[in-house]
Length: 275
Image (cartoon, rainbow, N blue to C red):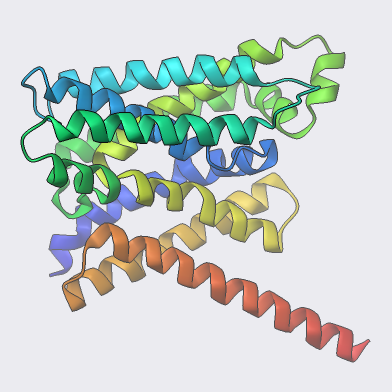
């Protein structure tokens, strides 16, 4: 039983590693649902090739997904403005809704459309292969190195865009590079784990880390710990109770976040009582 869970758990570690860091950026930028929007655009690209006779796991589906996320990255980088009348989060929500509706329309014309929708939403992380794990690890390592080399620019633009402008940074260019790299991660993650699980890996560890830390490094470490714990809990529950794996891990993330938030609340109450 343990050997059966090794590769899904390794994939969970990889997803936790890259998504926690990106999630902290996303929350600081105030674009919480950008992951869902880009993931849904990636899904739209993948579903488009179904009408051409390709399978969702065909390389053509991956490249179509990646192309759509780059389109989304360009669009999101152009819609960011210092004096915006319409919040960018609203634009992201519209992008998600339209992409989701378009994907449903496409899948309505494809054989087995309902099953494809389920696969895109929750994925099937239990079926990952060693080859997929290796490919994903190498790809995300490349994205991680890209962020490491340009970390000062990305951190400044996410955490202090006004200072970045004062220093002469081209915000739209660096926004596009951020969202493009983000899109590469999302495209691969959705094909492995589905839209909902990818969103959980991105947002929940980052949100939980904000409850207990201020510095970027400590937030990342806390997020990694939460991601690992939720992955273990969700995978174990899935196998023990014969539950859908993706949904189990998402619920485990939600449960851990709730427990951490309650724990922080009671600790604050105790400290106030002592004072």
